[in-house]
Image 1 (cartoon, rainbow, N blue to C red):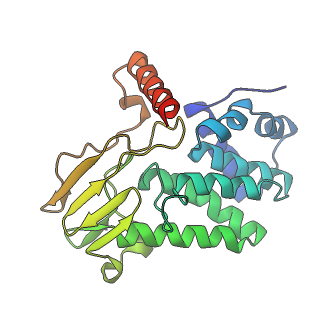
Image 2 (cartoon, rainbow, N blue to C red):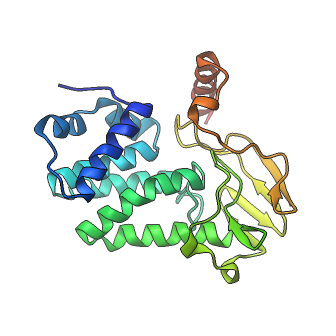
Length: 238
């Protein structure tokens, strides 16, 4: 029977299944059915490419021990790295949600020996490193999307790779200034919506509001619905 699990509930469910897979624990038949029969994921694949869809497709194949959805995962990665607009890839939802997705992709790539996914991971990591800025000798990711105030991972802390000038859509970096292009991926509410210019002062992005969690993103449900309606309107005008 189809289910429409999404949001925090789906994320928590995905994390619990992923932990079982990592620990090589058995996934029950009912849990597998919840993975296979999620209608929200099937719909979001087309209208709102996002981290939860990618994670879910990874779990689907890991649970069934087949890579039947590899091509679908690649299609989501194309959408979420704006491959049609740039040969380089930054994760559309911002660095925080890239980390949230990356661990699923990395495990999947290693489990099935997918060089294609490993290449995606390497390219996205490299783009975040090249477009980073310094704060007290620590590299931080480009300020866009729903981004928490966190530094790059330890293995990306390589200042020699940072570029003073670079252009990885939606980010155009010029010295200490970031020109961020408004962009969106279907009805995904985590993507950068408006054109903004961010100046780095003393290691901090001036006038950039860091993400504190989806429950704090909107004042109330009404504002969330209005945001989604505005996305629909923009898509209709494309």
